[in-house]
Amino acid sequence: MTTFSDNLLRADLAMARFASGPVLHRIGGENIASQSTATFDTICPANGTVLARVARAGQTEVDAAVLAAKNAFVEWRALAGKDRRALLHKLADGIVARADEIALIESMDTGQSLRFMSKAALRGAENFRYFADMAPQAQDGQTLRATGQINMTSRRPIGPVAVITPWNTPFMLSTWKIAPALAAGCTVVHKPAEFAPLSARLLVEIAEEAGIPAGVFNQIQGFGEEAGAALTSHPGIKAVAFVGEGRTGAAIMSQGAATLKRVHFELGGKNPVIIMDDADLDRAIDAAVFMIYSLNGERCTSSSRVLIQDTVYDAVCARIAERADRIKVGHPLDPDTVVGPLIHETHEAKVLSYFARAKAEGATIAAGGVKVGQTGHYVRPTLFTNASNNMSIAQDEIFGPVLTAIPFKNEADALQIANDTEYGLAAYLWTRDLGRALRMTDALDAGMMWVNSENTRHLPAPFGGMKSSGIGRDGGDWSFDFYMETVNVCLPTTDHNIPRLGT
Ligand code: NAD
Image (cartoon, rainbow, N blue to C red; front, side, top):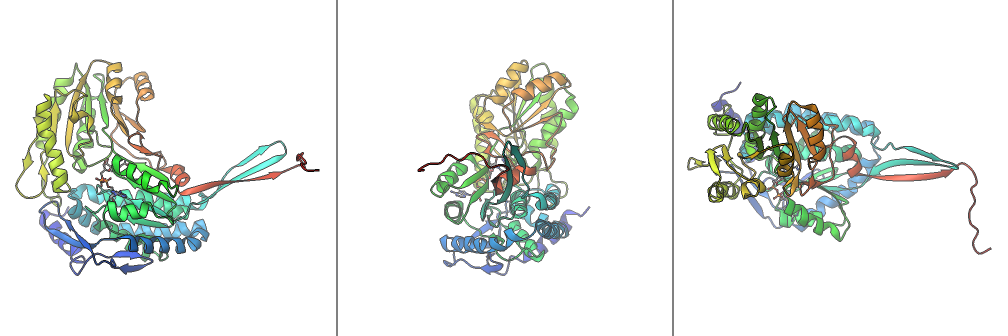
């Protein structure tokens, strides 16, 4: 295990590459500055220093990136699936080889602790391997027979796609979109979030070093309302894969409406963890604590509402509060750090505002509820108790290390509270009663449910949410359904009767 000072030195080395000038766009295999020469700064959440200047794309760079993706699509779609598989495995090898560098840069840019970012980079490689192996079969379809005819379905890549990603675990999240798009035969224009754009730059470099042809994968940096809006309304873009907030998804939907874009949205959540009194409470508490306080709570599937049966509510809350109080908040590169700084001062201000609101709404702050230090956007892991589901702390996606604990009486009460939210991304259920688990998962409004488990992922399983948490599913073949068009060819096996008009 490396020490904190080792990590600081290693991070300085990794960041040195950004010192020489603005991080440029990567379009058609070339570094491209913005025609306007506009740039923006990316700031380290740990200490407020400027990490890098970044080129800020406008319409000209978006046009150039879409044109590069359009031109490259002709050859990329024609490449045999097994050749795409080989290239994407090489890309995954490149990620593994540079996983440390990716993790260090991502920790500095996002404030996420290094212990979690190292794993996230490797998970990015796994995403590429998984979809690489599916590339050769991606175009395969079905044979559907009827009397007198055979129908043959197949799939073909939809065309150049836009991938728009948020600032939380940006590297891993972007691979979850870019890997299936490339495996399907689509070309990509990626716009990472303006708050944390640096690790995305490494991904495009690794892809090109692996032999992905110029123009197949392009990257532009910029602001959502400017570069993002231009990209998602561009006629050359056939589909938009977006991860971020619901209101941004709504904007993207309207921006893409005139050109009838296909959209895939992974949005926010206010995910319940239901703890019944028959549960293995030790494991339930471990999972609830992990799923809200890891990754700074800046996680779409975080367990941000814990619903606890009233018979065990006080005891479970006391244990969670004790654990929250012991969690180390600190610099993201300190190996002991669990919770690092929040991404940005505006996000910190949002999270802090809920401490005052919790009190005003009548909840109790059982742990945390305070900012830490004067420099950097650090807050203590927080637990609100004596909360009810109509409070803003139970309804709003706070997106920080902040947990709201709500008591319930029985199964029906738990389900009513769990579903009483605009979101429907994930739900976690803890009970030893199998029948109850089946009944309750049948009734929970969530795209993904875990019983007696934290968020363990299986890449072929569907990932996505219902209600305001998203549209569409990623994972397995669901990803290919989004990035590909299904077509059908009907062939007759007999001469069927054709109505003769005009005879
Ligand atoms: P955001 O919506 O503010 O930004 C996401 C991206 O959209 C950024 O790249 C931004 O520049 C871009 N964008 C903003 N306005 C745009 C516009 N008008 N047109 C095109 N692009 C635009 O989200 P964020 O604050 O970066 O991320 C946090 C949110 O992401 C949370 O709500 C979280 O739950 C969600 N999220 C969801 C999942 C999931 O899988 N469901 C995963 C991670 C994060």
